[in-house]
Length: 158
Image 1 (cartoon, rainbow, N blue to C red):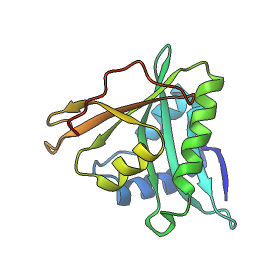
Image 2 (spheres, helix red, strand yellow):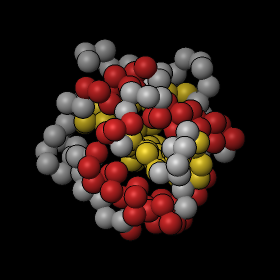
Image 3 (spheres, rainbow, N blue to C red):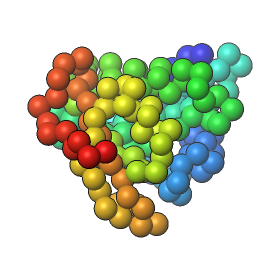
């Protein structure tokens, strides 16, 4: 498996993975938007035969922070390290871009995703009531691009 920067020719497959993996429905144009904002933050995982099996879209949020608005791995390739490799590449690119933190929002009921992010050093810093279009709640999670403590208050009730 290889991680590389997303190309415009990848958008159809990336959109397909997003449709089948994420709770929100996204138009293809959203991928163009993220590509125009930070091309280096748009990543795909490609298997040995060149098929895209996962993607991660990163976006610059503030002078010291990036966010992960979309991140998904094809169901047939989960729990095989694909997501971890995508995340690690984004962490390195964020560090090279001079960022300090990576932030994201994840559905409160998405236990598999919350567990993945905790495993990768994210902590819950906020509870977002009715965050998604369907009215479901979310957690805001954050971590340093480095392996050091975060100067944020941890929401300990979760």
